[in-house]
Amino acid sequence: MTDQEQFQLLADSLSQQGIDVSGVKEALKSQKIETPSWGYANSGTRFKNFAWPGAARTTREKIDDAAMVHEMTGIAPSVAVHIPWDKPEDGDYVAFRQYAEDQGIRVGAVNPNVFQDDEYRLGSLGNPSPGYRELALDHLLECCDIMTKVESDILSLWFADGTNYAGQDSLRARKHRFEDGLARVYEQLPEGSRMLIEYKFFEPAFYSTDIPDWGTAYAWSLKLGAHAQVLVDLGHHASGVNIEQIVAFLLDEGKLGGFHFNNRKYADDDLIVGSVNPYELFLIFNELTGAALSDDEPARSTSLNVAYMIDQSHNIEGKLAPMILSVLNCQEAYAKSLLVSRDELADAQLSGDVLGAHHILTEAYRIDVRPLLAVVREEMGIPADPIAAYRASGYEQKIVSERGTADSDGGYQS
Image 1 (cartoon, rainbow, N blue to C red):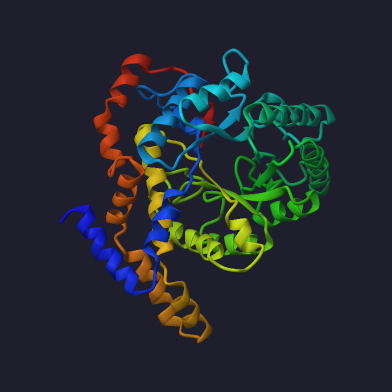
Image 2 (cartoon, rainbow, N blue to C red):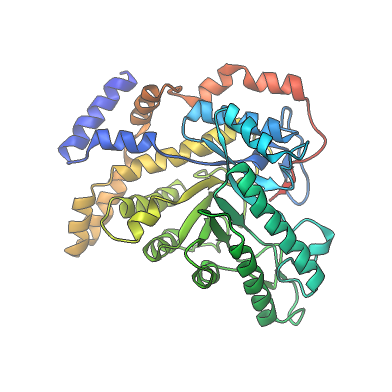
């Protein structure tokens, strides 16, 4: 049976349930997942960086690879950049932006780096040294300027700041330093842009982390203003944390700004999204889709402005093919969330039908959406099977031949 025939059977079944199949297809065609420049370069763990044949060595090679992922998937039209890892060789950010656009993509979120220099041993904005705090602030403000040059509307902030030992520093003083620094950066955001504040409950600091959880990021985003929101990284939680509940809360408060998609088994593993717990990924998309289809404000409008980004460390599995798979796994989870019978689910929930509501949700998760996605891709003019198409394209062989195996890494370590 062909993909089209399988799709027609699925479409008939969904129509009988009152699901608008044409609307589902249009939603899938408008989905956007941003890929990270650092995911195309050599990367590794704290123990070892494994050089990969053909891994990107320059900013333009990263753009080329991101453009190839978009060509294969049709839903990855932007690439997040990390400064200074992605500082253009000639320092010309306007030309860098133009190069990306010439390849059919655009520059997305700008991610500052205030955690790799020796000066940041005791932190950046939380550092007890006023001089080092100013150094970090200067870099963050530089990134605001870069946002204007590359026409980015998102400043994505993650900090490694924290302490390793009790008594090492004043926890309240570090809070005050961060609040002051973030406020100064917020004042310099380009017009129409957003500041996304990421959190992580531990690592690399092991006694205290200055932004340890979504509540801290949320509280600071409230203090800063409407253009500050929370960024949820799926790997930055303790085991067992209900991430979809966090998503629901932040949506309802109008403070969910974006995601860094990956997957974890133990800590911040940065594995391919959906590779360990695809059901969790579906449940997260279920909350997002439910909000987008509702009349509840600000959850609805917030859900329509969420920035979806991949943040992974491909160490042993290659570079482009894993990135394509990550994008496709997000697409599949989103497709399943669009097939949830919202009216039936709401009725079951309101009537207290516990098993019925659970069954409605899990039935949508069990639907094989591959025929649907194949048809959507064909209508978009992209390969029905992006992984197979990439492997057959010759691009991997081409970049291996042209680039070889670089000794340097892309700056990223899990």
